[in-house]
Amino acid sequence: MEKHWWQESIVYQIYPRSFKDSNNDGIGDINGIIEKIDYIEDLGVDVIWLCPVYESPNDDNGYDISDYYNIMPEFGTIDDWDRLLNECHKRNIRLIMDLVINHTSDEHPWFIESRSSKESKYRDWYIWRKSENGSLPSNWGSFFGGSIWEYDKKTEEYYCHIFSKKQPDLNWQNSEMRNEIYSMMKWWLDKGIDGFRLDAIDFIGKDLNFPDVKNPTFNGVFGSPSEHTKNKPILHTYLNEMNREVFSKYDIMTVGEIASATPEQTLKLSGFDRNELNMLFSFEHMTIDMGDSGFRFDHKDWKLPEFKKIFQKWHNTLYKKAWNSTFLGNHDFPRAVSRFGDDTTYRQESAKMLAAFLLTMPGTVFIYQGDELGMTNCPFDDLSEHRDVEIKNVSSEMLLKGMTESEIIEIIKHKNRDNSRTPMQWDNSTNAGFSNASPWIKVNPNYKEINAEKQNNDSNSILNFYKKMIQLRKMRKGLVYGDFKIIDIENEDLFIYERIFNNESTLVILNFTTKTIQYNIDTSIDWTPSETISNYAELSSEIRPYEARILLK
Ligand code: TEU
Ligand code: CA
Image (tube, rainbow, N blue to C red):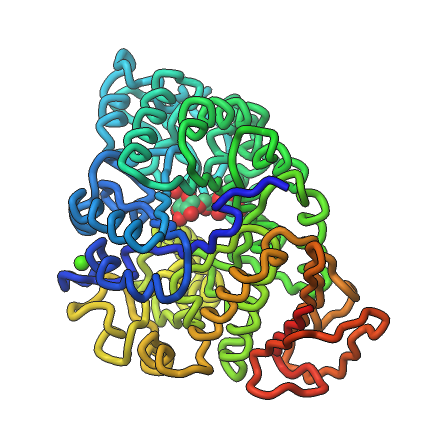
């Protein structure tokens, strides 16, 4: 069994814009993270995943980089960044950087040069196409609304942008561009970082012939690019080269965001024998409630057995061959407790139950800032409160189609990305202690009830249950390296599984409902536990609403 530090690590994802504002401009920053480094250490996590802090016009909150070698002024300076890295390493906390190399900002000098003339050396660093008889080069839709093609009057050609038009896609066929990216990666690694989260990295493997897609998305004009953008064989060529030129020279962790990777593809992408990535984020479990239209905000109901089978399938395919990640949220998805738990009556119990899930499942564990407090989705009363470029673009398309603002709010409220980007709730003071200035985005009105200070001092809080689960995982290596077997997989209320490793066994029983359920543990297995952990204060013969019960043997 391969063993690496990043397999046992528990990663804490920080979205700096919303974490802590140290200079009262209403925007989170690097010095704010340093102010809270003791909180992060006390949580017990091993790695920080820092979302992009590079120079950016913030069209997509930093996922549109205009200078890879500088820190955006709103977040601070490179000296502040050096200090953050030092404060992390002093506490044996590693730091991995979120890196966006499928596209840059349209304000990056490379793109300014590229669009200036067809003769520029940078022209081919991006993806330019002529229009055939006045029509768009293909019918692919951007994730942020409209077509992926933006017309550039100066040189009378279109450039490709899978995301916003201020995020032009780099042309990964160009080896000079690739080598420049690899030099930049080594520059950051030589500064001492411990790895990368590679943003939307599947899209560097897009089919550059741009064959039309069949299934137009909700606006009927542009098809979701997924069928032609995901995991083309060329992706392995680039990841292999990146590993050879960069990763292989350092003891680092790499995790690629590859939304629609299948377990079989993942064997190739993060296989122990593949020299590509260490692990990846695939979203099969995260899109279980997404309707079939391809429109991200379409909802469909799902049942627990479907959810469970995804995890069993992934484990059975990958176990001992490739490594995986475990997560239930990030800055692009709704808050986990609102989505997979109950953010009203049973918020406490269900947030703890989800913590028990995260920290007893196979794979490297990722905790998104605020989930350790049971932070919930945020009510947005009108579109003007939204900040996300995806919402701005998609809602303007919906308004053009004649929808009313309240209809749009209703459609987007469960899955808009701003749900998970509201300021961290530190205490019950103004703006939840995030800033003394009015924050860049609305504070969730429930901050007086849900905040770190209140939970720090409460031994029964969600925060302290996370800490307990994190310590449990550190003590029981079976939770990291063990086999994973679901019991009674068709059960529609309970998620029950065993983690088995050498002579260590852990039985986990999770109630994903508000029901109280009589469950008799299979006595054929000698489950005389040495210890039983529950998210309820006392044990009971029944499994209570959103109860997590963990039996250790
Ligand atoms: O998200 C990538 C992304 O949005 C796609 O993977 C998409 O969600 C998926 O293919 C749909 O199934 C990353 C960042 O996490 C996000 O915040 C950025 O907006 C985006 O890339 C562009 O950089
Ligand atoms: Ca600030």
